[in-house]
Length: 105
Length: 245
Image (cartoon, rainbow over the protein chains, first blue to last red):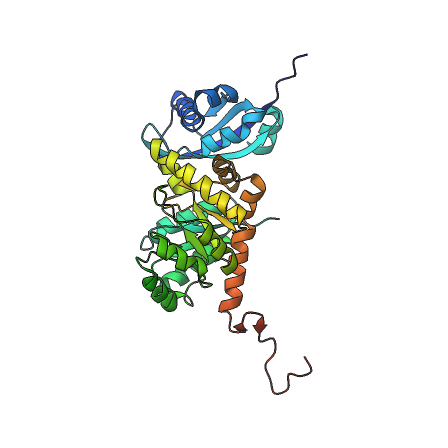
């Protein structure tokens, strides 16, 4: 029998001096995963941007449970998006969107 | 609650606003003790100002000096001049002779190595000496964030080897940011995730960010206090008759 897919939701705070488009953010996240772990690694993370609030500089990301450390390392390795300096900090991790919003946003 | 330590912030000391920004960001990220790299000729007034900024935010400040001697003779001279002025002394080991001397000197707290796998100076001999002299291996995370492609691949392989040797000889590992601006600061959890890239398990990563640097700071503060006499000996009471202590 197929096991249920376990996921993790991450609340992110984006620190930068300029406005960042949603598309640029997701592209930069994928690039970071690809650079660190290659195509095979990227295929295991099941990365998806669930929400992005450009004004508050918050984002919610979903990944597979087993790849959480890979995603955290990739996010931490990001220093710029489209040539603009940024730092992305993980505010918290949760198993459900509901509890993530309740605890960290 | 665990106290996280970042022993290597590298702000431009003349620009106190930048230093203040980095200190406040580190506090936000969960650090309770910060080490700021100061030039050997740092003024007392600068240190006092930095201490005030940190104490206003509720952070403990550690003064640190980074020495990059070319020869082992230069290293000994630097240590003689500066050891008692700074709470933490880190040595940038750019040659084998400096690495060997720094590893065996008890006045050295941290050993840093160039991020180039061809300049591999942390070997079994240095690790054994460092383990006896209580020196720690420092891993700066800033190059890991700033380098790309082949250079980062080489850095990771070099770090993997250094960490493996340190684990084998029980040399404490210290993870520091090495950040020159606030965009290079990360949370302790992020550093633990990054450390998994060079095979440092999370339990050791946690120790490298809190217990190991805290032990260095506590040991040195004890040594620099006026009551310290020699290893294992300190003044606990002064007076005419101390026999009834």
